[in-house]
Image (cartoon, rainbow, N blue to C red; front, side, top):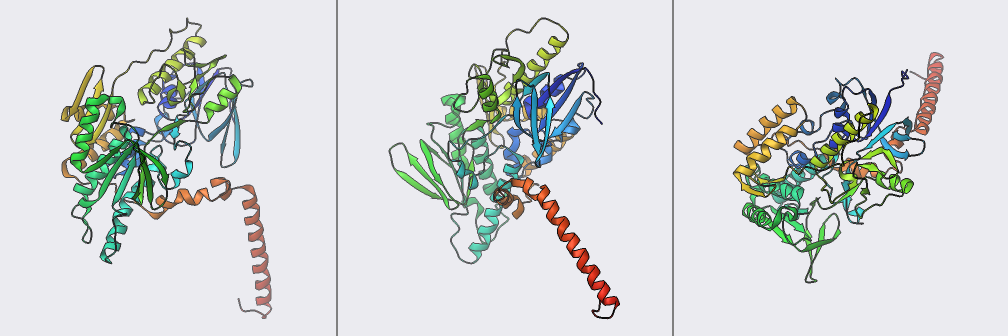
Length: 478
């Protein structure tokens, strides 16, 4: 039974960087925090590609949210997907397996993040998974390693396997560059002695982007260095190329000169574009706030919803001063919002407007090679890679995850081995199977199913009783 108190009620939506750091920043405050998220873990999204390519396990980059916050007595964690926010009633509605819960708030922090954008072609997702969740990473791991296994079987029969050994990454931003580099390393170093009928080093890795350079936010010099490093690994970089169609056999690319090319590929990875959470539209419809093309909502300089100072929006959902969708924006916004709430309940003067401190950007290309942009400093190569390693290690949540990640990195970078190579058919096909259910996973546990199961069991029990009765009378042997 819940205990009713008069404490200020703070609801936090999301368990990513914005949500988790908001909750942690309220530690010790005289508030009741309810964190609602559609997953039970906090995801360190920048390292998802390492799960997909067998370097790290999912547990190392996605600790349980309850475990992370277990020592914070003023936080309650709830699993569920938020489907509605009532700004006038100050309530949040979330669902888990068709069960609805309505939670009231005095202050609200919306940190629901962003998902993959297919630029209006959502059907591409069936054949080219994105890189936004553990499910995505595990499915891609199954597809990548499974492609090599299937190619080995077919090659042993003398059949063509080029389409299986062609991997296409769409999007030349940090995620796409890191993914392409790791698949190239995987095929040329890790797997080079593992097969007999195929030569893994002959696998094609293609990086496609409509932009004119690799890593556009990093500037022309670092972008050129990154492209050269990828090409040294064997990655084919195709710029000025827009993907116009994707199916199970491959994808169609249209170049700026008008020509089109079809690339036969079973394994495609989509790392291009993001779309803010649909909750942005929910807030915009009620408040009149403006949404940009990516679904991000325009907020005030205090990170609040216009007209609703008790509602904060942080992270990838906000449109403010052209802030990038990176972890540091979410972390700093979360801390700012939590500090503002503290000052309000303590009757202290408000904080000055939010100002983002840019700590720089980094992207790894391959082992011992990365690029870094910190203020006016531009670095590439081994020094940048060491910086990337240190920063990512620091921001991994928990000493246990930091320690195990460091061990796995040492094994991978020094020996070319990867311990996380397990993949199953279920990981590859479960998503598409669930999509065939009209109401998703809730259809598997809905009340009508329980009623039907109960009726079947009762009918079976009656039939068994009848057979037993007849058996006892010698009519039917039981």
